[in-house]
Image (cartoon, rainbow, N blue to C red):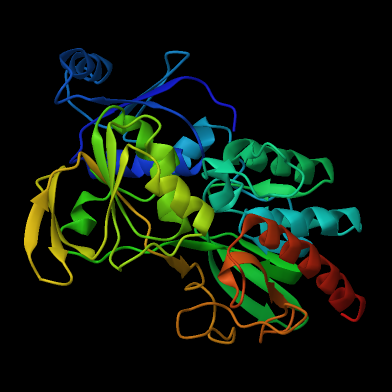
Length: 393
């Protein structure tokens, strides 16, 4: 999204600072970060804005306006994000704002259906925070993830799709011929059909110290947080496509990347493996498991174990990026929606779930390929299947 220059003043140990930074990253809002414990001028500004008090986070916008300890709702309002729907009932509600959901919504809108998209983070989904898409058909030179997301959003709006951002769906129920979704602010919206396209999120490692240091040295989005480590040493955990792609992205501006792979080889596609292994700034360490994150308010080191010998050593990267797989964003769904053991939604060939009128597409669906192009294709298919479903309902 377009935005003005923004500076966030805070400290690594500050929970509200982490939350504000996470929110801005999800909305793809770029910002400057000032650690007031390391920057005397920054601390002085915070004290001046807050009448001598040291209150963080303090956010200063380009026009000179400020927000102090803002809630996500206050941030959304300041950024001009629409978080409430215009009406109470639609033909189709798409939960999620990635390629599957936006494609389905614009297809439905072209068919004359009233469509509402509700996205808890930034429109574009994971594609929007991917550094670059090189394998999406129609872009021979590739396209930046943020630009791709913006184009898809503009296209959906052109067909009249209503888009809500920074709004989380917390519940779904069926009543007679209608379906109703509940949002985190207590609102409820009805529809004749619902598409669940909430995608998936990066899985956490679960090692000691991880929860306390997320956002303070441990990250799950290199595009969002990588630039803060310019000229420094970072570690990436994982051996798949995401770990390889993000390592290559980080290598553009960090001093060096240590890629920690638990197995004896990377599982990424061969083209990514070849690029990683030939990049002089990336060191790949196999048979390596992270067993602990160390730090007091800020990451200072990690402990790793050789899975062959059980030998333990300590590494001291400035930041760590974790890419070890995906967890489906489906925990909010009712029990009537069937899922597999991992939580992915089970669908019929029509992409309808076990709850009539509820469809699923994209990364949250069992059997999806976790690719942006296929997610868009599933979104188009879902829209056509929903059209047929609505003819009889």
